[in-house]
Image 1 (cartoon, rainbow, N blue to C red):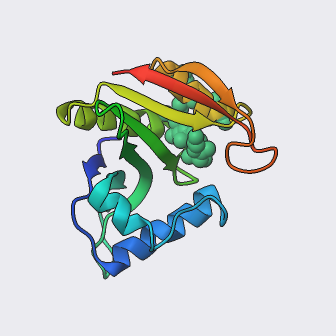
Image 2 (tube, rainbow, N blue to C red):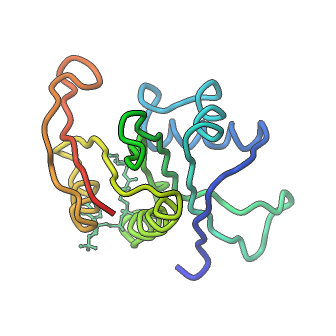
Length: 161
Ligand SMILES: CC(C)(COP(=O)(O)OP(=O)(O)OC[C@H]1O[C@@H](n2cnc3c(N)ncnc32)[C@H](O)[C@@H]1OP(=O)(O)O)[C@@H](O)C(=O)NCCC(=O)NCCS
């Protein structure tokens, strides 16, 4: 865990965008992952927070590996509220506390940006995600049927931070 750092992404190049796109597909699937048309917009107008693992014996590119992603947008009506659009940990790094670390550090960053409330949607069957969010104090505020398509209902969860 000591070799993992969580940071906000402020600038980017095409390599970085394509790396995030690849992670989106691997961890969320072709349908729900965002792509190079949305990732730059999210970085500039929303917020992208990543967990990276410092590579001790860096390869030729000398790059650290992105192992976790948290994508957020801000609520236009309630400016102190942010919505977690996507949150994932790369397979192989899950169930080791990485998700908890990314969420904890993200909350610290968001508080500095005057965010006081977080909202998200989650598949009620997604036990790992539900457990993670409940651990941080998220509560179910409703259920939206067909949220992301026919039969793709989601619980809405909220948390004061
Ligand atoms: C959901 C996700 C982000 C959790 O990340 P993680 O790194 O596994 O989280 P942690 O290791 O910090 O675990 C968080 C809690 O969930 C529990 N947990 C982890 N995997 C679990 C599983 N498969 N089933 C049940 N509980 C699980 C852990 O025990 C821990 O609870 P505890 O601290 O009380 O023991 C990760 O599983 C993931 O990326 N899933 C695929 C993408 C996804 O579903 N994202 C969420 C969309 S809303």
